Amino acid sequence: MMSKDYKDQHTEVGRRIKELRIEAGYTSHETFANDHSFSRRNYWRIENGGDFKFNTLLRILEIHNVSLEKFFSEME
Image (tube, rainbow, N blue to C red; front, side):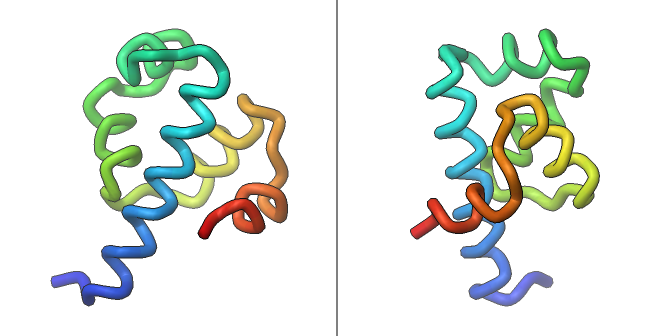
C-alpha cells in the first residue's frame, strides 16, 4: 500500500500533467492520449494520481516542451 505522502505526490504530479494538457487546448484526456499514442486508460490513471514510469513523464513533458525543472518548479 502507498503511504499517504507518496499518494499525495502522485496526485499532485497528475494534477500538473492535466493542467499542461488543458493549457495545450485538449479538453479531453482521451483526445490527448489518442493524438500522442498513449493508452486512454493509462493516461487517465496518470492524471488521477496513478503510478507511471519515469520515461512516460519525460515523454509527456517533451510533448508539452516543458523541462523537468520547470515542471517541478511550477508545482505547489
